[in-house]
Image (cartoon, rainbow, N blue to C red; front, side, top):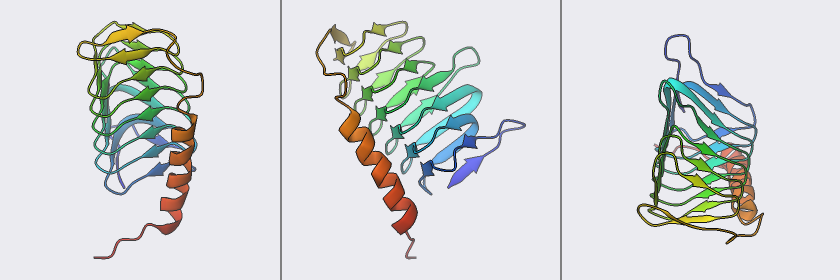
Amino acid sequence: MAVYALGDAEPQIHPDAYVHPLAVVIGNVELGPESSVWPYAVLRGDDGLIRVGARSNIQDAAVIHCTPRLATVIGDDCTVGHQAHLEGCTVLDGSLIGVGSVVLHNARIGPHALVGANATVTGGTVVPPQAMALGTPARIRENALEIDHNRPNSQAYVQRGHHYRRELRRLD
């Protein structure tokens, strides 16, 4: 895996987390237990903090960044889909950030919410708990989800991380 310190800022990766060898983790990044980071994802904590909670997964080619003033915080049991981009925002427990979506500065994704595929959550937007944010710019549909809608996905990625840790081997 490509894990880099940047000056004094070193990633803090829980021993039970899984970082794929083709992922990049730089600087002030914290990865919680059983979290996972997949191929070509980049977590770049150069300007501030990136925190990923327990059992959350950052899927292929996602970009997680922060600003000097705004940390990017992802709670427990979250899914950040393939090619999503999060910057200077907060994603609370049990939420799903869809494939190709963008969540920008000071946005707050409530617990057990969903940001739809290719949606853009503009700066300062608050997505309530169990709501869906769909489209560009995202429109909110409140009370649209069950509280554990993302649990099967987050649990599948916990198991996938364990499987990859045990079984992945490079052949070239």
